[in-house]
Amino acid sequence: MDFLLPAVPAYLLGTFPSAYIFTKLFSGMDIRKLGSGNVGGMNTIRSVGKLPGLMTIAADIGKGILAVYLARALGGGQAALLLAAFLAVMGHNYNPFLGFKGGKGLGTSLGALLALSPLTVLVMLLFIAVLLFLLRDSNTAAGLGIAALPAVFWFIYRDWLWVAAGAALALVIAVKHARDFKAYRNGRRKLI
Image 1 (cartoon, helix red, strand yellow):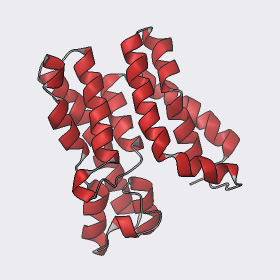
Image 2 (cartoon, one colour):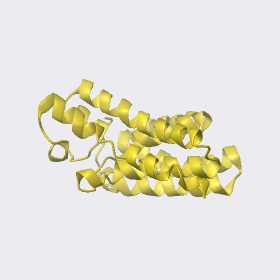
Image 3 (spheres, rainbow, N blue to C red):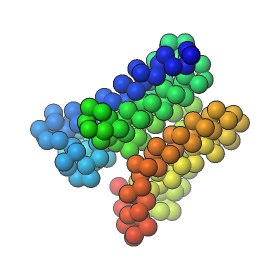
Image 4 (cartoon, helix red, strand yellow):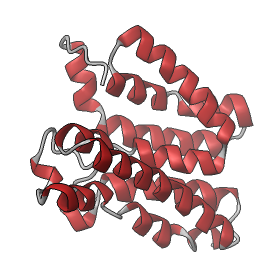
């Protein structure tokens, strides 16, 4: 049961509404009513500006890192760390303090993966870079890249717990990217 100890703090870290806060600070507006309505870094960059957007991305990455480090500090083993990463992303994507609106989970996932497995991040970034070159669409490339996470975890760790955690994370992110995939299939070609 020790693996459940970091669950609530990890989820709560994920709910820190960085895009909402930085958008309010810089523009006085609600990010959910701007651009795509997504509560994440890219929508903040497009709708409010580079500085608040980059601050949002940094905070989102930080949430993922902190969730995993907190789980580790609380003595959690492998299952606790993977659960903390997943719950931080769930808190970010489905924020109860913002009416269960949230981001797409990429920044928070990146942070969690940096804390869990820097090698995974390197492999994923290379794969996403290739997809970006081929598809010319950042959202689709990132979403498809994350979909490969279970395979990357298997390649690196050969452990079914990692594969299951990767599949859960990939599913949560894929659901949030469904609109991007559809837009890409309908002919949208947008690099950023």
